[in-house]
Image 1 (cartoon, helix red, strand yellow):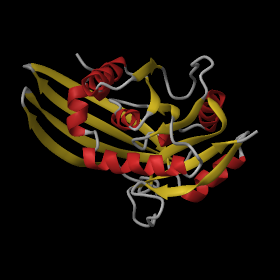
Image 2: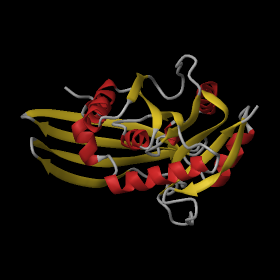
Image 3: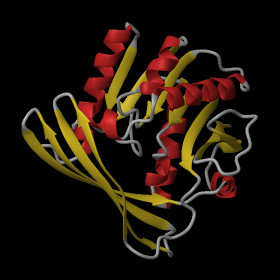
Length: 258
């Protein structure tokens, strides 16, 4: 039985993955931001790639993409997608905080799906940046996707987003819980619950995510405590020219130095 939504890629894609049109816009923004730094191809690392919608579009644009994710089920689905699209795509099963990929020197790394804030402790954040830095070439770029609508500490437990989704071989019920946050740590907790009937087999999953809350100012300050990084700025997921005001999420861009 599946314990996590990440064990069920076909259901994850239906109830959590962003629509293709949004992924396409995000990839266009990523390539524009990389182009500003003279990066128009080369080896690219996608942390927390899930089923790799960003990675595969970037591979179609000529990048040599490696997808990194802790879930083998998600990576298997990503490889199947790559085969269907007939693009080269490498995968590595590893966590996003500490990883070792040998001597590869990537031109850039990306961390999408607003997952970067789920690295909550300062020590783990430093280790994440250290792992990325070790695998980037000089002047390499690291782009992180950040949720911009969750700055306040959650005070009371609440339920939201209850929905039933029907698909060809079953259905999924899903709902979110928002739990009281930790004001000392600056974190909130979100829980995704699902009850899934898939090919006449019932799965019940519960994924608990803690996340830090960031503003563009917070991301800028973060770079001050990290060796070998400069913060290049915050940009709307819709494009560098768009206003950040009222955006659901945005990209923070870091550059490796030294």
